[in-house]
Image 1 (cartoon, rainbow, N blue to C red):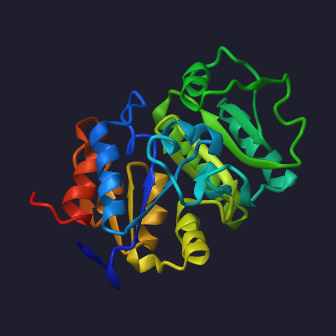
Image 2 (cartoon, rainbow, N blue to C red):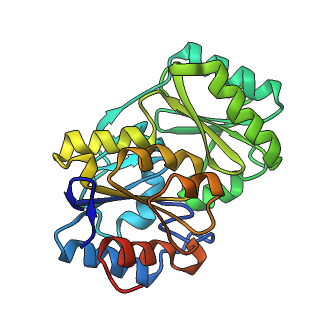
Length: 274
């Protein structure tokens, strides 16, 4: 077994989309076997995603997840039965500022208020794909900002990838320490509570499970995974990640289309031969 910064790895925390599952949201038999092998070695396994917690059910069941599940990039942490352990919500003021910035950039906003996913146009780009991914439909409202009392996440959506980089930057500049803004996919920018980021997930699991962050390994592929890379003792970027993400990781695996999750676990955590 490979050691982290302070002894053997005791917990593995994995991103879902583009890491644990392929581009087509397939959880491969090799990935399932890799998680089984972690358990055989006594290593805990947990997942985190920008998805709502219920949107991860398609992986929690086949993987027999028995540790806390961090949805909304840590905005809501739930038990395996999906009962809530803790939630971090945006203030209405921060939510309104976020929506204003997204609208100024002409970026489509999605609002996650409590258990509701709210969109203004169900035919807009990525809505149908997201519904297929999370396995539940959005609520449609003419004004997605009508109810901002329990906002866990706001997502800006656009296929203009250069625009999304600028939107991420502008949100970070405008919101500062009031919220966390990061791309979870090249076409998504997620805004969550300041403490609701994947680095915060590492610290929450340390607190909830008693496993030091230095004895955790994290796997991911997007800019919003970098914060958990920095907190954990060992980190693995998927092969399709951009160079900035790769530079922040301890190791780089193959891509998610080439069993990057399983290869990373086998090679860099279980210590199998390369």
